[in-house]
Every structure is written in structure tokens, then in C-alpha cells.
Image 1 (spheres, rainbow over the protein chains, first blue to last red):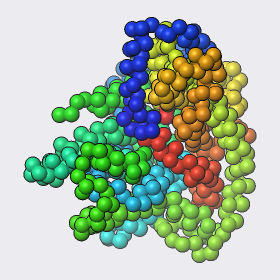
Image 2 (cartoon, each protein chain N blue to C red):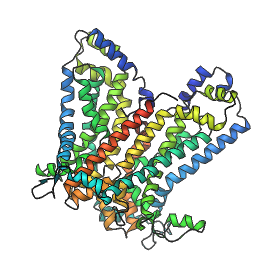
Image 3 (cartoon, rainbow over the protein chains, first blue to last red):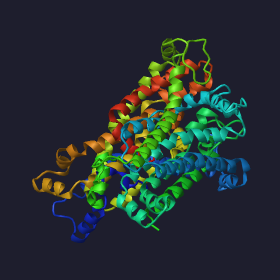
Image 4 (cartoon, each protein chain N blue to C red):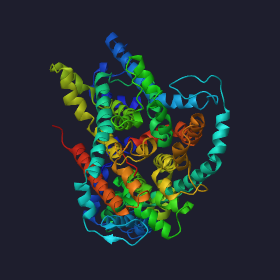
Length: 317
Length: 301
């Protein structure tokens, strides 16, 4: 669905599959072909998915309709928790904070990645394997480790202020404790996290674009912008969809980075749905409200992911 | 990802002109300049990606009285931080818990996903689309969607603070990706192979293990690498489901430690370095698999 077979290189021809399936259906299954045994292969995994994923999700939906502190009996409140999300400015702010993180986690790295891809040579780069392993390093280590590293960068006498000092802008701000700057500071950690990923995706994707397209465009007198707009961008559609899915969904469901760096503070200036679900359910005894946030967050993520996969399949304009 | 050779292949077939073949002629000055700027840009971004880890590594070597201020070399190397971090955070216990969880989640998830991927990718049976969508659901769903009832339900069954209580939900949440991944692999293997095996009298079980599995190892390895790194780094589930210090995993234990003991920066840095070592080893050895898996666009939880 959202996974993009176009960028699963060595396993490629998924397109064969539907064709084979159609043929199979019209001819009926071959004699002796196993059919019902398939269920046996599925049973163990299906059981686990039902017990640990689907039933909990249904339970979350139920909890979203009650008021419950996790201890005493729950009281049914219907859609009350959802009405709160729409009317309570503090709850609405959670989603606005998410939106700001989407800009930093997704829009910024993808734009940067595309810009670099457009400016750079389209030939295979020597030593790309080496660069790739460094650029991918942030994806490998735990967010806990990343948080340890970044909390000093943002400290009052940390690297961020040290670097700003070089251009005379060190105001001695403790970035993560500042009402204005804490959320963008978290956003920059996300941007740092995704930029390498996007660069690697786009730089390898651009090498798959047929060079004769560029040659033809040049003969037709296309300028650099037109080349980018009409050849590079459509050619990278699959990679852009992958990058969008990973980064946008990552931003929407972010919990670790907020929990580790600011715990939603100062005040509620960095609270996001993922963090608030945790805080309400396990800190403040508002399991019902937490569940309703979880349902809304899940629906948003599904809608966004499906929209992105639609975009990736849209024919070239 | 593609190797340079693979990337060049379409040019050879479609370009048709010798100039389109890389390395067949010396690069023009303009190309050399563009290649140089490419390298400069890649170096700049690599430095940015590496800098936070580098500064953390430096801090982990600071002597006790050197404060963690900006990027500065340690006045003298102090490996004692590592010993202290190991003791203070009860790191042996944390690492053992993480290892137990990962060493069960990875094989369990792998076997289950080979089975489901095989069923969905190589067999036809009624209701397979509906069942497949059941698995797909978990591919997009954030872990937040299940965490609240998961905690209360597991607690009711006495499974909170047990290894099973983390391993089972974690594996279940990875099954969606694994099923999708292995299905894609088995769909790409020629049906003739399966049919030939059946005609030779192999049953479906023998076909899977003797005929299909040998060529499935690259796909399986990629999946295992992702499972390991996801499991080792899993934070939300571990934080909520393992609150007892005796079973806590490294990310959860260290995550709580950040809040409580920020004063001991070099100890914290040392613990963070120690915690990353297993993942870094897997990454260094099986990097291509990891990158291929991540760039497939799969979202974990």
C-alpha cells in the first residue's frame, strides 16, 4: 500500500504478481495446489496480531468513549472526549505543534534533499557507500542516545550557542527551556534525523533517471529549473513518496524525542499528541482522554499515508 | 540501493551514444567541478550527521571535573566513566534485558513472517486479501493506538514487568512489516519453481524450506536486521510495559536516567555509547541490508 515497490530494488517485479494472480483465477487453481493449508501458516501470526494489535485497538476505541482514571469504574461519556479535542484550545494546540514538527521533520529535509540533488552531479559519486553509512548513522542509534547528544548541544553553554557566538549571535538561550524556541529546537533534531535519509534516497534515485531525457531537454533549450521540474521531480516520485511517508508519519507520532528532551515543556509549549497520550494515560489518570487522542492520531496518520501513496501513483503531469 | 553499475545499466541500453557510458572518456573540467561540489556537499552533511555523536563520545572521555561545555577535547582521557556508568545505571541488567528481548523477538518474528509471507506470496486461498489487510493495518498504525489498553490488559493478566509482556506485543507489532516484506519477496520468486517442486512430490512445507528458503536469505537478513535494531531501540513499549528495574531494557532505563541524573554528563555519555554498541556492530556488518530496509519506506509503529 504505502510501501513502494519501486524502491525495493533487488526484489523488484511485483507487477508480475497481480498478472499471475489474474491468470490463476481465470484458470482456477492448478490441481494439487495447496489451498487450505495456507491458513495453517497464518494462524500463529494472526493470533498474535489479533490479540496484541487488533483487540487493543478496539479497546482503545472503547476507552475513547469513557472517562476513566485507570483505577475506579469508568463512566460513559459518548463522544465527549472528542468534543474536548475540538473545543479545548490546549488539546487543539497539540495538533498544531505536530504540524510545526511536520515542517521540520518532513518539509525542510525533503526540500533540502531535492535542492542538493538538483544542484549536484547526476553521475554516480565515488565513495557514496562511505557517505551513505555516515548519513544513515542517525537512523541506527536509539532516540535516547540522540537525546543525550542533543541536550548538550542546546545547553546554555552548548554547541548551538558556541556556533552562534562565532557570528556574534550568542544570546545565552537555553534552547530547550525557552517557550519560543523549544519546539523549533526539537524540530531541528528531527530535521537532522531525516536529512541524511532524504539525501541518500534522492541521490540514488536520480541516478536511475534515463540520462537521455536530460540530453533531449538540453537540445530543446530547457533551463535548469525546467529540467528539475519536468524530469528530476517526476523521476523521483517514488523516492519522494517514501521520504514523505517516513518523515511525515514520524513527525505525527513523535513521542520519544519530546519525552526525552522536554517532557512537553516548558509549560505545554512542546506537547504533541504522542506525548500527551502517554502523559494523560500513565501520569494524570485520564485514560479515556488519552485513548481519544490515540484514535484521532491514528486516523490522521492513515489519511495522510493513503494520500501520500495516492500522490506517488498519480500519472506524470 | 543500487550499485553504481546497476545505476549505469539503463544508460547503456537507452542512451546508445558512447558519451553516455561513464568512464569511457576523461571527465570535462565542468564535470570535475560538479563532482567536486558534490563531494563538498556530501562531506558537509556527513559532518553534520556525525557531529552530535562525536561530541558525545568526547564527553564520555572527560575527566570528572571537566564540565560538558560545547565541543572541546577531553583534558585527559578518562575511561573510568565507562566503568562508573556501568555500575551506576545497573547497566549489566539493562543490557541483559535488552538482549533477552531482542534475541526472542528477532527469531520469533522472523519465523512467523516467513510463514505468513509464504502463504500470502505463494499460495492462493479464499479470503487472502481480507486477511492481508488485517496485517497491513499494523503497518501504518502508531504504537500509541494500542499502548493505553495494552498496559491495563497486560497488567490484568500479570504480564506487566515480565519478558513475555514486552516480547509478545513487540513481535506482534513487527509482524505487519515482516509479512509485507516476505510476501513481496515470495511474490517475486518464479511460480514455476514452486510448481516444479510440487510436481516432484514436495508438499508445501518442504517447498518452503528446501526450495524457496535458500534464495530468500537476503530478504530474510534485511528483515532480521530491522527487527533487531527496532527491538533494541524500542522506547514507548519498553517504557510503559517494563517499569521494574530488574527487567527494564536499556533505552527505557537510560531514558529515565536522563531525567534523574543529568549532572553526571560524562557518565551519561558513556552509557549512551555502551548502549549503541550492539546496533553499531550490526550496522557495520550488515549496513546494506539496513539501508535497503529503511529506504523501502516501511514505517515502524
